[in-house]
Amino acid sequence: MIIIVMGVSGSGKSTIGALLASRLGCGFSDADDFHPAANVEKMRRGIPLTDDDRWPWLGALRQAIDDWQATGTSHVIACSALRQSYRDVLSSPGDVLFVYLKGAPETVAARLEARKGHYMNPNLLASQFETLEEPQGALVVDITPTPEAIVETILSHIATLGSDGKGARA
Image 1 (spheres, rainbow, N blue to C red):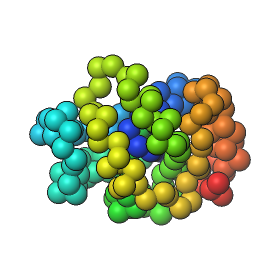
Image 2: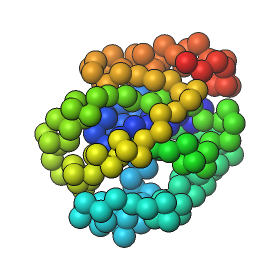
Image 3: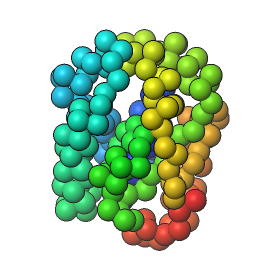
């Protein structure tokens, strides 16, 4: 099973993704690690990425997903996946479970202001919410509970899926 924990920067994707992978006993990747250096520098300087910047990054992520699936490896990925067209690149129908971490802009902004050592410029948050197309067919999880409670919600949902992970979506 491939699970993509998605949402805007500061929604908790990396924290939740890593905890979820640990609980599932599988690998974890942060999609940010797949960005070329030029994209990282643009984000550091507060310049929003264009789709031309994103397509190679999304292609690299899809290749990694294909590789994990080819070996039967379960994996959790933290990835913004803000637009449906991005999610379409990352997922063939039914082969990836998207978990959308949803939060109010004020909640996310407060988290970003408290975060240290991350290259994502907090000034890009407004552009992320403008870009966000809320996903259809994803498990939607509120970000206000504790990370542990959020992971329990996700695990409860996964338990309702068939063994192939392609059961009904929330």
